[in-house]
Image (cartoon, rainbow, N blue to C red; front, side):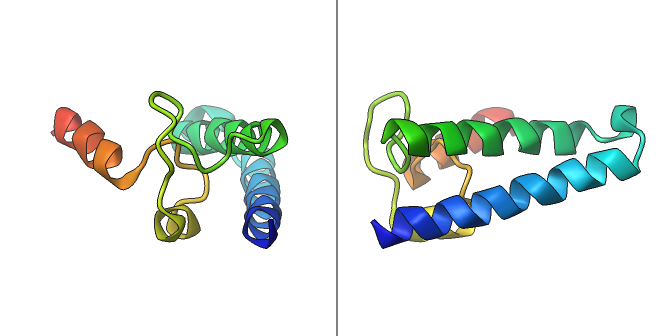
Length: 88
């Protein structure tokens, strides 16, 4: 669909940005960038597999608005909130 194609382009651009940032800095100082890189690569793989936009545990659809703000998320809004609460 058009939405998935636009998300793929945004993810690819994000991937390039993170890779460029890692090249310019000491990789040991960028654990967040390494995590972001992994999440983006997983999201792109999920697009290729036709699984993008589905929560990977229960296969519930992830809300389009949530995907627009956090393209690489593997969580729906409810599951994301539950995961954040576990970290607090």
